[in-house]
Image 1 (cartoon, one colour):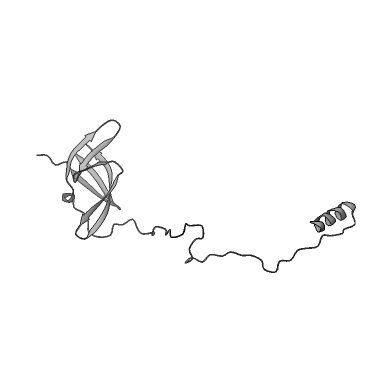
Image 2: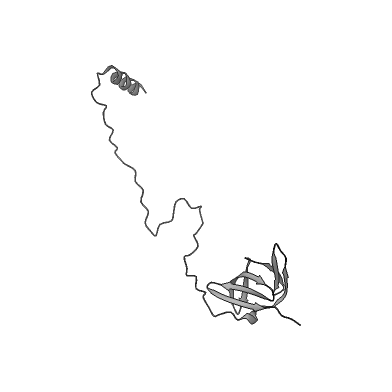
Amino acid sequence: MKRLLLLTLLAQSGLAAEAPKLELKHPSSFSVQPSDRNPFWPIGWKPAGKGSAEPVGPAIPPASFAVTSITLDPGAHFAIINGKVMGEGQQFGLQMGGQIYQVTVKSIEDGRVVLTRGNEEIVVPLRRK
């Protein structure tokens, strides 16, 4: 603090020609390799893998789904798919064999439901008795 005050007084009086330059012994640096973990991520958190949008596994047939009821309200559309109430945009898991596949309800229309899995689109008609 005294040194700063002295330098300030010398600079104001015009006696100091130039302030001494500071040299760092150990300058800090930061570099991240592509395989390193981002230090700003929470501990234990891992990013989702960047996979392709292509579905892995066999194509899912429309017979794998049972659409038993469709309700078309002005504000929302609902359908009962495999015994559960689903809305547009909702995701659910379908178990086939030993695998569970993620399926999204794309749209609910009069008499049918359109589901998606990756780029695959599955149109399931309403089962009528």
